[in-house]
Image (tube, rainbow, N blue to C red; front, side, top):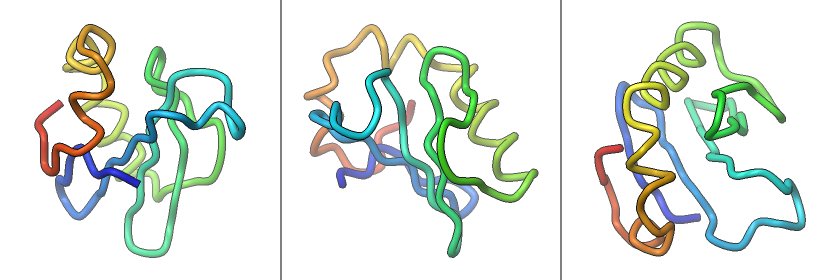
Length: 85
């Protein structure tokens, strides 16, 4: 899965074609052995879980710059490692 950002040990990933698992725009987050799937539009978790602090960090990061994910073609992020979003 293409990594689009890494911060505070949290890895953020996004598939371009992931309609089989979820039908809404989302990102995958990994922290140590935990994984969660967050909606891009509102930051809610739709699958899995992360520790509370890391959940809040992902949600805050998503809230600061959602236009960079939603306003830019996803293909730009498909193979960009460490992109700031």
